[in-house]
Length: 278
Image 1: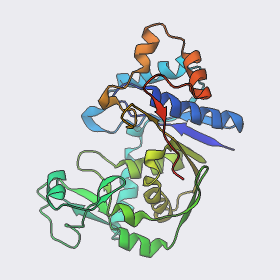
Image 2 (image 1 turned 180 degrees about the horizontal axis):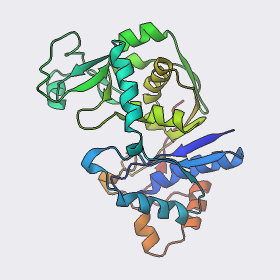
Image 3 (image 1 turned 135 degrees about the horizontal axis):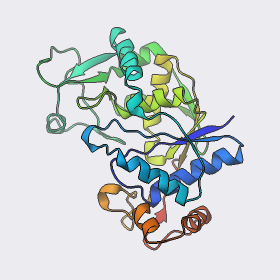
Image 4 (image 1 turned 180 degrees about the vertical axis):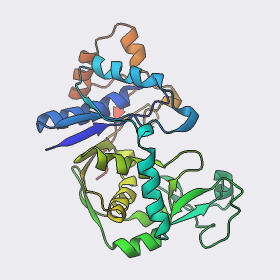
């Protein structure tokens, strides 16, 4: 059975880019007579606003979508802790006290997900009096896992290349888990068989496939859909003030009509559809 999901973070209102992503996931599940899940990813510290989750539900209902809700991330902290301890005890994680400024001062290589950590703290004695993240030792992890494959519905079969992103953070300084660890564990716990999300997360999937191998988790398929872009070719984003669904809803707009337009590819003026990652 196809089980897919929409997993927003309650740190700001949903916009048309979120609506498009939710509709894609919803319709893929319905076409396969499968299940469409809603998961609230609410472990981003003070940025998470619990009241936003109710707004998200109203937005999805306004769009005419039907879903099953699964437990929010904040209910799963013991699962994240157990997985991190497992990796740490196997020597696959190491503490890192570097700040973002420290890393940028080293003029690191830039990857698709931003600055690639140069491994400053790996093999070093760090000051545990400072806040520390836990990073994945990619070389050791890859030596343990061997070559891995994964499949995207649009781009086809991929050879996992997690080294491109460097030693990524698995447990953040300010949160119980990184996106990489939490989303991977959650999808397994929720029985997700098709991970539907934007093309901007395509490269993150290399890390998620590695974590699945290291933690003995089931391997889904992925569907990385194109993104809605603004006039400058940037993905729609909360921080850039992209039009909120709640504003359209509160103005009396017809949500089902908006969903129909998005399905037909009738983008509002100033918005376009990007290219898939193929």
